[in-house]
Length: 427
Image (cartoon, rainbow, N blue to C red; front, side, top):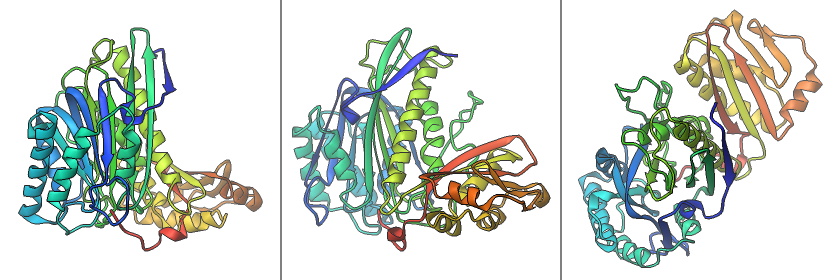
């Protein structure tokens, strides 16, 4: 066990040393306020990313994914108004031109600028306005700009949250900052490449991305002043987002522009985080906690949401089935609507399991709301209905499903069904 402490700190994305940020009104959306945000490190940083598994990935996703083959970056730019998705070769050209303009203002190469887009699908970015705003944002960079970036993330709609932590262990202390945005609905499913040299799962745990094509976006920006050994940062990010953002959903579909990026600029006076070291273990735990806080905070900010619903599936054949079953149950409209009304609807749970495409032995399945078992051996169990209803009425509803056939488990968090969110799909 590693002895370490994690404490919240102010500053969001700028809490780690050596990062500055700004948000400006570029006129990319109809509202007023920042709609283009920029985060810049004082020096080129180690960088990692996880991007949507959606087959129609946006131009900013494709650009950033390509640039991160180098494992290095200096800045992250987010623009609203257009997700720059389904825009063809012209969209790719716009992304490259915006990155080049931003890089010229910062004083780095275009390949060191990562892009995130949010807004309308199939609509080209107002490139001239965005490029001019990139210059303005560069001039406005400061240590207090994280909140403006968070505002820019939501200029096209959705909710945002920012947070930062300091993690300390026997050999040093580093800081991690984050800002995240989600639209309604959201259910990010990132692409997790495997490293043949590292047998540990880097994320996803065998996640099967849903087939539907929603237009909502989840964006995650993360910064740290840690020094991280080459090749380690990618796995740290992959596992953290898999255990946080991919375990929180308010729908069943990933977006075309979903992205999570992490920059580590090596400015903290702390030892290098190496694979298997105490520092790396402490950092990974803190990073995961930060991502969990951001993800759950986004869920609770969904308009109309009043409750968290925590679905834990255990007894699955493998991690793939456990996660697929948990996502199916958490994505059940019938279940979430019932929980909103304070009803412990176990039939909705069984219906959802039937659509999950996982190994099932029906007469081994059990379902519990909190401590109250409502299904045992695949059939209704005698129980105290008032006690079950009391669990469903809580601000956090804990729902457990036992598939009874294997050792694997997974947890996914959702909310009760917010009526205001019905029919809303936007980047």
